[in-house]
Each structure stands twice: as structure tokens, then as C-alpha cells.
Image 1: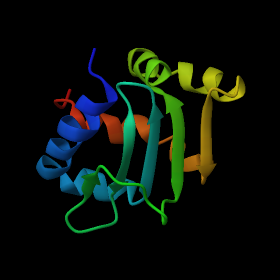
Image 2: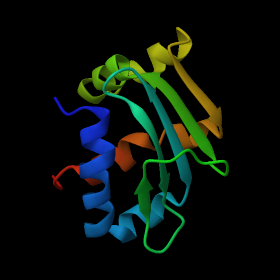
Image 3: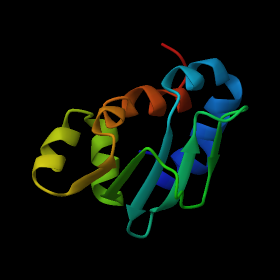
Length: 114
């Protein structure tokens, strides 16, 4: 199972480079704050040309996701878990909650196309 660092330091940047047009379809700026030993903070800017994923905190994010590395990894294996974690207060979404519904689309950029 990939960690948040694997995803945001390697997989998502490669996906953005390979499929920039798919990233632009989402057209948003996300900030991920993932706590724990395998976490970190990343800004994914899908409005820039080319789209970027950098290990920095964004002050202009339209959607900020805060979650533990353990829960983030669990959500990767079961995307439906996100709603449950949200209602339990273990996943925080700041900004536009509708953009959070597009996370699966964003994270799939780091995976090979089906």
C-alpha cells in the first residue's frame, strides 16, 4: 500500500506530467495536510500550467483536506470510507466540500489508466 509520501512525492507528480489535460478538468487547488510519520503537507495546483504537486502549504487552496496517514491509507483501499471518516470528525474538509468529491479523480492520475 503506498503511503501519502509515495503518492504526493512520486505518483501524483508523474500523473500530472503524463496527463495534464485530465488534471485541468478538475481545475482546483488542493492542500493536503496528512499527520503522522508517513504524512506531510502538499499543495496540488490543477489550475497552473503545467499542473503541480509540491511539498508546501497553500494559502490559496480551494479545498484543504486534513487526515491522519493511517486514515488516508485506509481511504485509498476503500474510497467510500472518506464519508464515514468525515462524519466521525477524523477527516476535515475546509473550503469547497464539492471539490473533495473529486479526490478520487485526482488520485487516479497517479495510477495507470484502466
